Image (cartoon, rainbow, N blue to C red; front, side):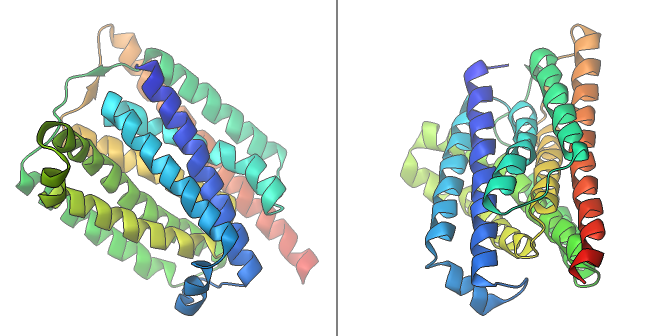
Length: 291
């Protein structure tokens, strides 16, 4: 694994977590409710929200730099650390409660990704694929996103945060995978040619819609649940698209490296699930006290 690419991805994850925390702080301060379009517009002039936007832009630039040096299947899983960064940030900036289960989940993520980073090496892969392959993949993802949004219209806030966050994660994952050929086109053909390519606009569309849906998810007040679902779904979609569309895979020589890398990534995702579950349990315990 390219060490500089890994560092860039980890710092990008921290930037994404900071952005999400600042956005939620701004939503709480402004009293914005999920789906409140007018309330969302108020945030555009909020200083804290704009600071979050700046952190998000920094994160995207760092992510682009990381993907320029490494493969999607290696870089994207490291973004799961966003949820680890979100724990202390949420504690200090939005008064999120941190429990032993949260710490356990964070420890599991760190250990899993440490092993993944040690033994996970890319082997093969292309920088772009046929337009039809992209279109079919994006169509399938669009149908899944529509279904999740329909399901998110019912249930309590934690469920809504998770489902809308998952939808944002899918779109972010698609945008990140498209980022790979977009950056390559920039290198090979120049900035003007990149802007004329449909993949750039598809990347921008997925990223912007994912950005809006993340705001909706964060407006529920469930920071850790929102960040957890985005952080888990994003790399799953990216790795799947990288394998199916860009033909990426992990080096299987020796075989135990491949097995250990896949197992370590699965462990990290379990850790993220532990954190999300702990957040929901904390919310249920707090409800009677609020009442």
